[in-house]
Length: 78
Image 1 (tube, rainbow, N blue to C red):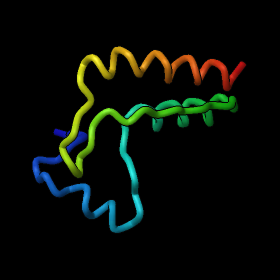
Image 2: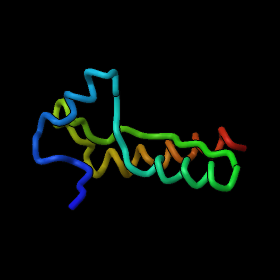
Image 3: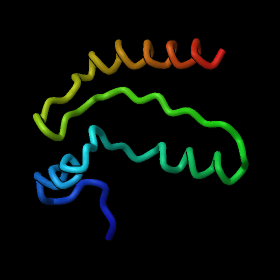
Image 4: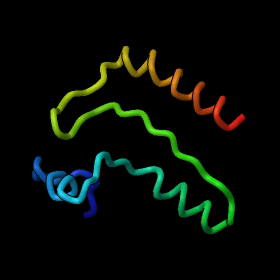
């Protein structure tokens, strides 16, 4: 079975040693499809959880903050 997050809570430290600042899953698929169909793609990410500190956004923070991120993204591509 393939999983995104390993059972080892320190798995991210290996990647941090290479300068990795964040991880996510969806952009890989987006950029792969864009390359396949020779179109432009953009991914704008909002940080919701920290693997380092175990901090997480509350449901209220996500509800109020994520629509603003989407608004900014739409303004950028307009």
